Length: 105
Image 1 (cartoon, helix red, strand yellow):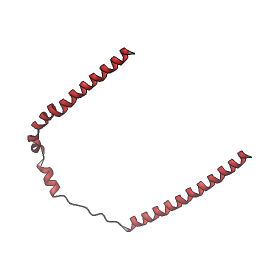
Image 2: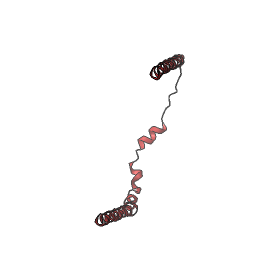
Image 3: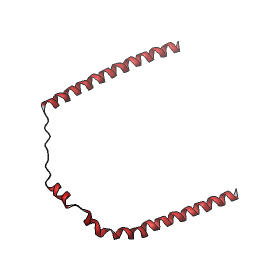
Image 4: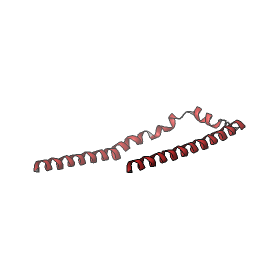
């Protein structure tokens, strides 16, 4: 048991040392590399992209009477479906009650 405990403590300490080294690398060494490329960010932007964004045209959305009719039909279908589900649920509840009565008798 002592050997296992020593092994467990050693593994935990090695993991802590590795994690500490990773944090130092990430926060100190890797930051220096990122700072070198900050000067070149503007070189990669395309002038064509910014011109295209300035000249963008927008299209208006026209809701027609057909769309309104379709929405009304969809609402009616949803109401009918809700009624059918409610009726089916009532039928299932009745059937379950009958089965419970038969089993208790």
